[in-house]
Image (tube, rainbow, N blue to C red; front, side, top):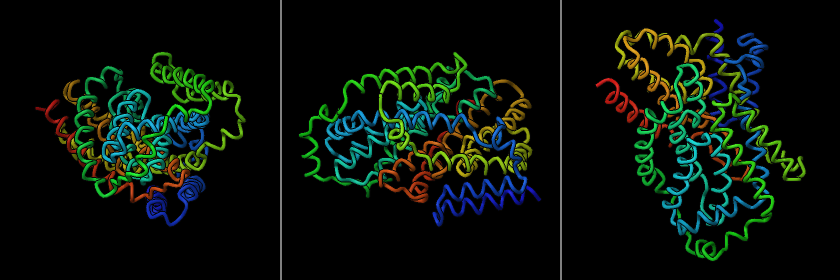
Length: 428
């Protein structure tokens, strides 16, 4: 009975979020509250559980990076980079999109896709405003590229961190097994964008000419503050890269970096905090609790167990189910809590595998499905929600279906390519 109630609450909330008939943050909060009031997820689990309820590591990572971006914004760096990107592409729409996607996809495995999205979205909005073109297609392409690129490394996408911890996989393991297929899929995606967004490519020669004569260095309003910010940001990036070595969560690195950034900037803290996307953070909290209700009542684990029982000893079928099942379920439940919930189930399946190589192949199938499922819908990954929130704040609204109609297509393509890779590399 409790499982059925959890499904109904989640489905109703998802309907209102997808159709945008109500404010998504309000819907998420109401659904989360109903889950807690009806006892589907205990109050203690909502706030204090490591595996169910609100994932504070994600919330505080986002908060810290939003503060850092808010300070960096005051230096004029985003205007500088926007003008540089516009001039480098000579205002050619497809060339500009490829440039921005390449920057996003290359940086995502190093920083993590959420962090790079928070840095690249303001730049994209600036360059699109300068060129007088709609920003939404470029932002959607960047989000999709960040989820693809982030799959390449252990720290590039949050689900990878969860999987690595559960499976005992190293940073180098991800480089060897995930990076090759990510490069191939990203190359295919770059070619695909020429077709997907062809109706959105607009070239305004007058606006381009005006941008080409600009001197981007004049966009830097506070060079001394920029130097301080770059030093702090560089240290934060190093902290992200070494967090597994020094055993410090990325959220702590981001919070410390945000505090140091506020100190060295000398800016009014109230002004910086106004740059934080508070509705996005609150939406995430509600979404985490919604998914926790499904997890706590056994809905997600039952689905996973059914899949495991169905495939039996056919381990390529199991790998196929993990790729496509994770891509589908991760697209609707947010791939972070989904991965945390499914990881023990996959671990049990791996324990039954005939040899370590087959077991490891199942982990890679799971990782690929969870990562690429993040492109499935507008709420499927943290990067999606953050970018859409930042875009709305700047006046470039991206609807649930505007994103999802592209995301579903890219998810199907990447999942098919991922399964072909798993089959050829591990089962042939």
